[in-house]
Image (cartoon, rainbow over all chains, first blue to last red; front, side, top):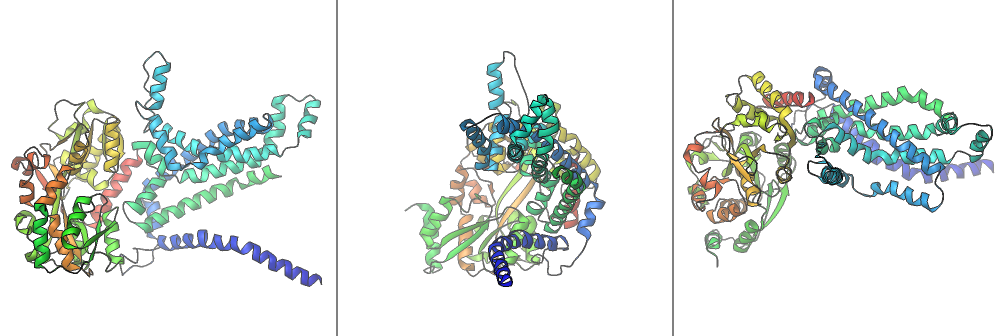
Length: 287
Length: 344
């Protein structure tokens, strides 16, 4: 009887899980394998009948210092945007989870998610309208302030950071909010009754207990930002050349798919390495 | 009946075009062939319908020709790429004897070695134009006559060029007095570009980009294409195209028939209509590149940019036409361009 029940359990497990794994196979594994294959080619098979396998595409990353320079630049951008998201997002989540109650919380929460419902390209173009010279931002400041002001934010690195922070901030707020909300009120009460100050409660209780959520949010921001290309291209102007834009160029402008694929895999490897190096910290935070 | 349609009708009758066919055209989007005034009169006169597919780069166009045999009947090939396409067996010879308007194409285009191989025509010269720069005439009163204006500190932060390796290096070649088709001193060109980049506000990538930046007052002076400049001007933007003393980069677009086309007859009829003066005059009202058909160019009104500026023999003498670029050369250019951009 027990065996039969176990077998039925297993069958149910397989039936329930198979759509998800099938989806992963089709949507993640197959495209990635195709890209891996492309990255090892000398030419695309449809363009050159005499194509062959090579490691040259990976070699180019090592021989041409431009790619390493750009990867470093992209990593720095990732760190900058992630820090900004944490500095803005965490306090926001803290207030939402611990201070505001009832309907107001729902409304504010909705406002946080709202940007997710609009297309990211539309969001970036609206930033372009706000930031550009004589744009919405400059005109409003001009109207408010008595002196002449020229920000010149458009087509600078800060413009790229602003656009990216706005796009990815909700991730940090959502994950931190979930972690903060799960903290038992009694622990906070107990700490308060023992005379802990607000600062001590934040530093010794709230922050360590919500760290897994915060770090999960940070990873969710860091990974896509390192590979971003659309935001730097539109908001960055001549400063907007990053590792992601070079990969995009290989696919769209130059039509060198093998090199683009190889550069993508190097990015993937570097990002995985960074997460692997950070995983001891992540693990400690979880326990 | 409009006179424009008479010649088409005659053509339809003489070629016995009773069978309506579907002609599939591969081109850039919004580039002449897909406009209402191009397809509707042709369909009315010949019964053939026109379907479009678009490409975003010349490499993509070549790949589409290679991978979709039989899918296209007319394809736009920049003359620089025609030889390569012929060598790969992608294009069919064109019988120009049946084309009424081909006689109007001057020998400099019709006999161009990039389009004609051993007397066989593989591309019908359609349009040509210049890559140079344009100014915002509401900001700059007198148009500069030198390409060095892009480097002028007076316009620092108000300049733009296209994000394209070949175009950037050819502009730098002009500015350093070198041959655009075989830049002997690449280091000098690179150094010249390195001086230009800090002057830039941003790069532009499409005509639409360019128009928006100009309309928003972000730019005073920017590299541009002659055909696009006339289009921007017809939209009401204060744009003036400059052909500087140092010269300008000329390009030539041809229409070809893929080797695997199953409607070659109808395709050649459509190409003939594309170099028809009547069609070109209508197109030029919306802003068009220069026509390769001299009769079409002559049919323009006197004040038209394509007649006034590009029709000037003194201007034509300053133009150097692009010739094919080897893959190695192209890759070297790209490497230089990426290095320059990464250093920003």
